[in-house]
Image (tube, rainbow, N blue to C red):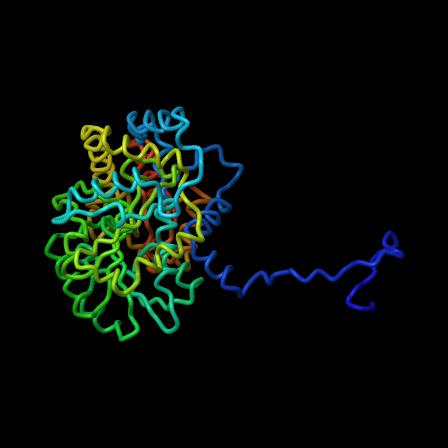
Length: 434
C-alpha cells in the first residue's frame, strides 16, 4: 500500500484504487441522532415487525395520515382549486422565498378571522408543510447556549431539529389528570436567562387535548413573565369536537409574542400537498425589534418553497370550501374517538386517562405488570405489529415510556376491527391471576 492507495484481488492487479474520503460513521453523528428520533423511523421499525406471511390487512394507527380511508378525503372544492391553478398556467415558475403574495394574503385573512387584530401578508411565510415550518423556527432561534422548552409528551420532530441545530431542549410535563394541561410551575422552574421560546401544541398531538381560553391566557402570562416567545403549533387548528372550542394562541399576541405554525394538511386532509405557514402574531412589533422576522426570512432565502400550483390554489381552497365539509369531518372524528374511548375500557392492561377532544390521537397508558412478556412499550408495540398486524406508536418515541399513541382518524369498521385485535392480543398475553 502506497500513497493512501491499495490493491485488491486478482482482477485488480495493476489497478490503483483510491482511498475514498467521504465514508460516514453509521452511528454517533448529529444526523443519525436526529433521524432516529423521527416518527418515520419508528413507523419503519413497526412495519418491519409485521409478519409478512399474515393474510390479515395491516391497520395503521401509528401515523396522522387518515387519507387511506375513503371517508377521510379532502373537499371537492380543494381538488377543483388545484386543477384550476394547474390549468391556468400561471403557477409553473419559481416562487418568492416567503411565498406568493396572493397566497400569503389569503392565509393572513383566514387567520385574522379568529384574532382581535389583523395580520398582513408580511406576517406570513409559506413553507413546505408544517414540518418545514418547525425546521425554520428551530434554526432561526438556535444560538450558542440557548434553550427551548418542549412538551412531554410531544411531537418528536422538535427534539430531532434541536439536536441537529445545537439548541438545548428542556421538557416540561403535560398533566393527563388535568386534560393534558401544561404544568406551568414546572415551566417556570425549567426556564433560565438562556430560554428563548416555549412550544405549545394545540389541539394536542399526541394527546388529543384542546386547551381552554383560560389556560392559554395563563400560558401567555407565563411566557411574558419569563420574557420568551410562544411557538404555537396549530397544525390541527379547528379539529376540536369536544366541549371546548379551538382558540388560537395568537389571541394573546399582545400579552406575549406568538409565532403560529400551521398548514392545510389536517383540516383539509391533504398532508401530501405540503403547504404550511409561519405566522408572526406580534401586534406590538416585539419580534421585529428582536430581529426574529429577519432570521426567519434569512432561513427562507436558503430553503425550498411549497409547490407554486398549490400556492396558486390556496385562495380558492379557503374561499370555496363549505362549512358543511368541516362539520362532516368533525362528526367522523367525534364518532371515532367515542368508539375508541369506549372500547379501550374493556382492554386489559390499557387505560385512557382523558377522552380525546381534538386532533386525531389519544394517549393510552400501558400497565405491563398485568401483561406477560413485554419489557417496555416498544416491545409491546412491535409484538402487536407482528402478531396482529396493528401498528400503534410507542410512547417512548413521544417522551412517555410505557404509553402509546393511537390514531382514530380511520373508518369505523377498521377501527373497531383493530381494537378487537388489540383486545385479543392483550387477553392472550395477560398474566394468569393467582
